[in-house]
Amino acid sequence: MLKINEIYYSIQGESTFAGLPCVFIRLTFCNLRCSYCDTEYAFYEGTDRSIESILSEVKKYNCDLVEVTGGEPLVQDESLLLMKKLCDEGYQVLLETGGSLPITKIDNRVIIIMDLKCPSSKMEQKNNYANIDYLKKNDEIKFVIGTRADYDWSVNIIEKYKLNDKCNILFSVVFGKLSPLELVNWVLEDKLNVRFQLQLHKYIWKPDQKGV
Image (cartoon, rainbow, N blue to C red; front, side, top):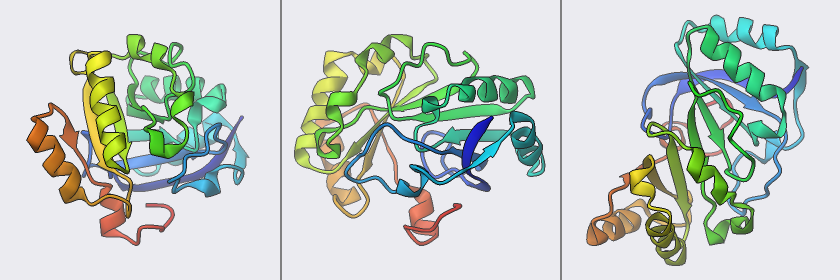
């Protein structure tokens, strides 16, 4: 059994899959408390569901791309089995994880989108840098940047851990805290090899709307 906050069909708003139709499975619970969190409702709210019932609901949408998100999905050990079964069913599976919990047991077919928490998140100390060694070439590391200090920190981390040799790197702004133009200008000035992204769903729908 897994505690599920919501399952919905929408447009992928972030990552290299941005713009594609996607089924989202949002799990309840999170071990982090980021200063800019936009899904606090997933900390506690949820319904116990069997993996079979989750798979049955996902199938109704007739969509091959599925993202397991949260909260923090890896708080619930059964999320590993859910992702394996989704892969077995032929779905392309994405995992959004905050980067504090080990990723070593995740099915190799899953594309991991892992945060490295910047200082302004107030969760920088929770980063599990050992995870970097287990990332695959098609996985993605995401930096959510709210200040110039966050940006400088991110550049240093990219260099320190040679992240450009590891996987895709995503830069996005803390919505409403830093202008996209400002971050883009910094990236261009430094000629960084990163992918800038916007949270598309926050521009298509209202920024605080659930189920999108």
